[in-house]
Image (cartoon, rainbow, N blue to C red; front, side, top):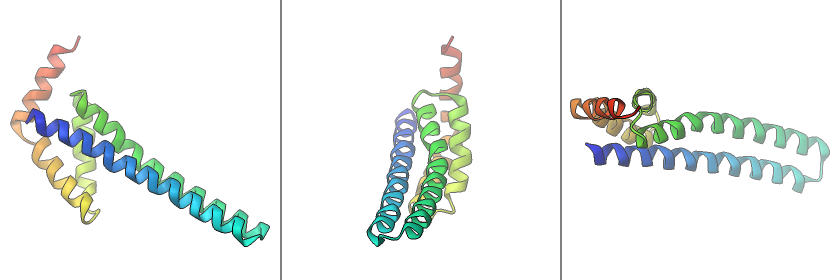
Length: 124
């Protein structure tokens, strides 16, 4: 299960870094559309909408990156956070559902719980 936890940590980081990249792309596209329009009001509206969407997606991505780091460092809080995010990811069809199912399978396993317990006891 140690290998599965490592894979899951990397998947959480990668999945959420992609979401951050999409957030930045949405911001750039909407702001660029406002610039191309040449209209100051359109620029204000599109850049504001782009910023709100980008910040929203960015804020949704940060817990997943933190959970992935916690999993890689074998922290119990990372396992709990990833379990919570795994349940929420079940609604994100199709890739989030797969990540959520894999998260639940790996992180609810007794061997994984023991792995994190041993890691906690080994950490001063």
